[in-house]
Structure formats: structure tokens, C-alpha cells
Length: 368
Ligand code: SAH
Image 1 (cartoon, rainbow, N blue to C red):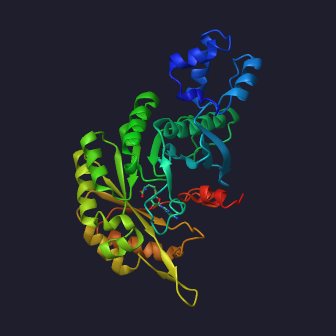
Image 2 (cartoon, rainbow, N blue to C red):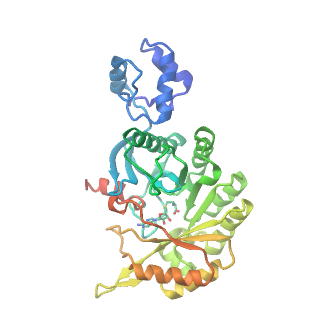
């Protein structure tokens, strides 16, 4: 297997370079390129051409390699399918928004949680990602933004020029971050110290692993927490999210509000709106009729939270349907009338299969 230079310590990198009969300062030059996310050695313009070719044949730059890159038609969302050194695949998404550049990273290859609406979990969990593998996803996005700047290709939706830096991180890609907590924490600490990304610009999303939420509280960094709730009753939630059999709704919300209160932060609640086709082919509301809107309101009344309503992104293997725009607005209206802060999550990159795990799954199925 080719060595991954990003994974080497400075001393190891210098050793590697001097063994190629190169002066030591080359190691420093290579490190600078790696820290900018250079995907290959060809891009390392201040290295001699012969060295670049030799390195391309004998080593890899980052622990993730881009194998597919998709751009949404508005040019503001870029989705990457990345390959790890053991050929596992993960996804990450760069979103250019009016408030900055946000990157959604994966924390695991696959997922063990078994949520009934999600593509990521269909092939099971392969393994946890290392700190370097999570961090490299940010570097891939950072390199892409640098290319934006060079080509002047993208402007942000508010018309501002893109300043070319990743400003926000959401750990909402494939996997359950609280099942890989040590590496996720290592990654966040590093994104903060090395990339200068503020705690408050980092969000961890979980399906509700209560001991993990308590660990985050102990850790004490004022990041944002998002809970994938998706149902306001234990009965319905256990039906679509097996984790609810282990950690019940109230227990999850108690732990989550304890975390957000400690940092005086608003808790983010994720709520996918699911429909189901009936025997005559019409879409019936599954978790988003008026009764569930009322129940969700009762559950969250008076709490410091924001409910993100997410119309379900269709996944072929899953037996759900997307509700109509009208149904989405009706659900939101009931929450608003009950004093719950809510917004409908704008679908980003829907044309490029931006739902969790879709790209990876399609690739595994051989759909190009
Ligand atoms: N395991 C973590 C993070 C990964 S999933 C969690 O559960 O929060 C990120 C978010 O995408 C979750 O809220 C998840 O429920 C949601 N999601 C998964 N599949 C989706 C789909 N097909 N359409 C819309 N949202 C989806």
C-alpha cells in the first residue's frame, strides 16, 4: 500500500524525503501543500517535476481520494464521493451559503443505526473514520474553494465574492458521530485549533445516543447539537429509528437540552417529513399530519430549540414518499401557531443526490 504523506509526522516526512535524496526543505513545502488539501503531487507547483512524478507513482497525498465530484445546477453545492485507503467510500458535501461555506462531513464508513428512511445504513457499518480521514474531508472542500477563487467561478447566493475559506462544519454525513466520539472530538479540536473554525460554527448531529450526549456535555466545548428526532412519540420513533428502543425520546431530549442549556445554545431538532404511498398510489402523511404536529409542539413548548423540517429525499430502497409542499407548510403552520421556532430546510443539491449516503449507495450498486 502506498504511504499517505498526510499521515506522517514532520520527522517521518523529512525522513521519507531525504531517503529520496531530496533536501529537507522539500518536506516543509510538501506539508504546506498537504495542509491546503492538494489532492495529488502534480499540483505541488514548487516541487521539481521529476519529484512530482516520482511521488505520484510511490505515495498518496491525503487519506481520502476524490473518485467522483458532482456539482448542483446552481453551482453552489459540490458533493464528493471519496475513497479511503482500504477502498471504503464516504461522502462529503460543500455548501456555499449566504453566511459562509459549510462542509458536511462523514464520521463513519456506513452506519449501524438502521433508520428506516436513510440510505447510509443500508449496507451496514464498515468502520469508524480516523481523525485524519474526517479532517481531510475539510481539506478537500478547502481545495475546491481555492479553485473557485482562482477561476472566479462561484459567487455566494447573496452576491458576495467567495472568500475561499471553510467557515462552518456539520457532522451530518454518513455515520453516527457519537459512536465514534473520540475521533470526532479529536477532529473538532483540530478544526478549531488548526483551521480557526469557532466552536459555535460546528454542529454535531445525532440520532440520540444518550451516553455520547453526556460525554459531549462533560467535554464542555460550546458547539451546536442537533437531534434527529423525526417523530414525537416513542411508538412512532421506535418504528422508524431502532435506536429509540434503547434510548427513549424523553431521555434523549433531557440529555440534549442539558447540553444546550449549559452553553446557552438553541438545540437543533431535525424532523424529516415522511409520506407513504397507499394501495391506490396516493401519498398519505406518515409522521407529519396535524396530530403529530400538535404532539411535537407539546413536546417542545417553552424549550430553547429550532425545528428544522426536512422534506424526505427519496431513496429507491426505502418504502416512503415525499409529502407535498402543502403538507410541509401545514405542518410548519401548526408548529408556528404553538410558538415553536421552525424553518423548512432548503434542499441543497437535490439534483446531485445529496441525501445522506445516496451517492455512496448508488456507486456500490454500479450506478454511475
Ligand atoms: N447519524 C446522525 C448524522 C447523520 S444523518 C444523525 O442521525 O443525526 C444526518 C441527517 O440526515 C439526519 O437528521 C438524518 O435523519 C437525515 N436523513 C437521512 N436520510 C435522509 C433522507 N433520505 N432525506 C432527508 N434526510 C435524511
